[in-house]
Image (cartoon, rainbow, N blue to C red; front, side, top):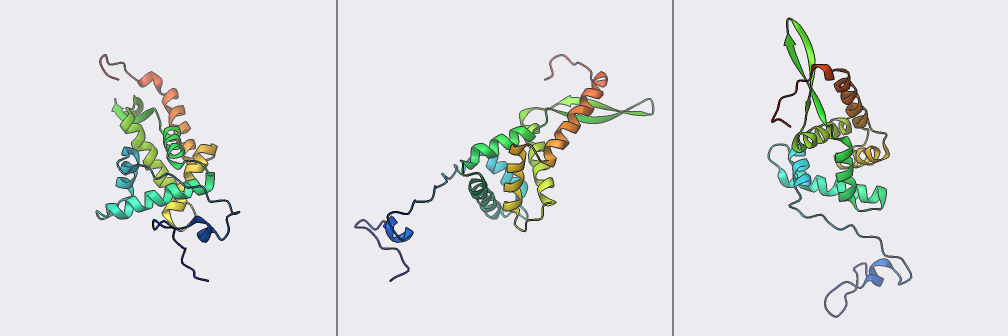
Amino acid sequence: MSLLPTTLSKGVPDPTSVLGSSSAKPATRMALPPSEDPLLHYLASHIMRHGERQKASRTVTKMLAEIHKLTNAPALPIFRQAVDLASPSVRLRSQKKNAKSSLIPTPLNDRQRTFFAVKWLLAVSKNRSEKKIEERLAKEVVRIIEGESEVLRKKTEMHKLAVANRSNATFKPGRA
């Protein structure tokens, strides 16, 4: 018996020859996200080293496949939800006034929120024990969805400090 799958009349592989028998259930397929997706492009930009965008894009695609394997659900909505959950709404900037340093909470726009979420996701995933970056990222995304990630702890810590220092915030008309 040949190891190569047999083909049908139009050159398409016969699914029964690949799976072994017609009674076997076909594996669920993951729909590949569009290559122009801005969030995936942004993540690939942060992963990219030495201008190797194609390698970074491959890593992102493998990460999505790993998320799909772990959750058995569409990976892109899960990744978007994880980034949204990890995104802080404020940041704290330090300002010196009268030889005293105080923290000033500042609201973030959508792009800044995404930046912090991706930055924290990559930083926390570097500390995981898996060898491949796509596995580390996928497992960290799943942990964010489950509510057990270090990224969520960072976000809540930042929000607690912002609430504690809200008296330092100044209202400036015309600013978001």
